[in-house]
Length: 463
Image (cartoon, rainbow, N blue to C red; front, side, top):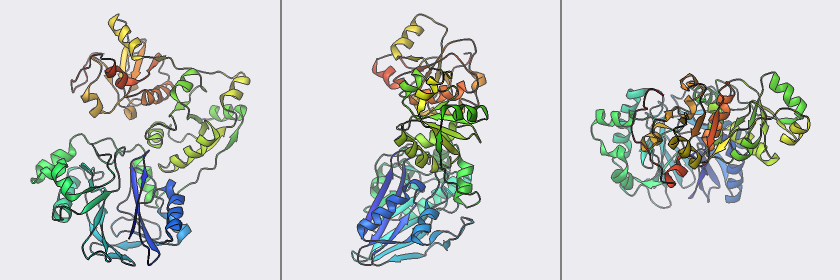
């Protein structure tokens, strides 16, 4: 048997190629839209023809590459019969099998994360009749379980039942490989490990500690991470209810870009925080192309319906288009061909963002300056330690809650390392919020410098 895990480190998405070398056939599971060429190259390298494409569930955090891959390979797309997809496919049900040579894939319906979730038991008959490993989709992660996206507490009960019925009875040595890992928003506290065993998870995964359904539901429902920003749009595209669009950006001169901006376009600045802070096109959104969860952050912050113009190195433009296609951000109409150089040479206005160190911020606070600290990290990060009397506005809530930011006072925006804070500043400035300073190094630098933190779970009132 040939087994290959394909990791997307930016998003935490995991997909798989499983094949039989003797038969020269393979199954691809949970393909990502931005990895189609990688599956094709891998199959060719291994001497395999992709014969089946399988989805463990309807994804809500990224656009599937199933139809793109099927168009090239002519392989059928297999989904659970309850998925309700509108494109050409084949239905599978609990107990169905998929065979490629000596490799057999057995389907188990494991609802919870979504009603159509399945797990795939993989048997190598050249090795024995029992499953070697299970592709658990978003039912079970390494160190965690899937979030109940659609059904709340009732869906959490389904997760409990699926674990009890399908996974708990397995031998400790059976390996598990999930559809997501660390960096994904599909669960909480996921491990960075790419795989595990049932025995390891039985011993260390908190989800396996609960034999009582109600206690398990309470555990799952506590601290669920926010839904992906483009949740509804991504689900609609993955069901075939909304069209898939391929962005074809063209080069824009500075004058063309300025006209497009006047008509509602938004510049997405892909450059590093320091470069963006030194100077950028007014109204630009800054998300560094090499930062974690680049595409997901853009999807959560980009103005709805605004055509996008990219600002960055030519190689970064291609990477950005591919990454954004994964989350359904397809309205990329162009890129500034000569970047900020031409923009400046035309005499067009340039804005900047003041960058301050944690030492600057500590000095301001010690001197009693009337500064507002705005913390844009997630609640779990906030609970681990934050600056006393900071205002907590998680990144994807900051724009909607901007009225909570006191006016007329300087603001120091902080995250874990200085990337999210720059992105939030750029989004807030599009809505007229001024006086924002980016704290370089973020809370990591604050803690390393030995400055004090508070661990109060509730945001103090009266800012």
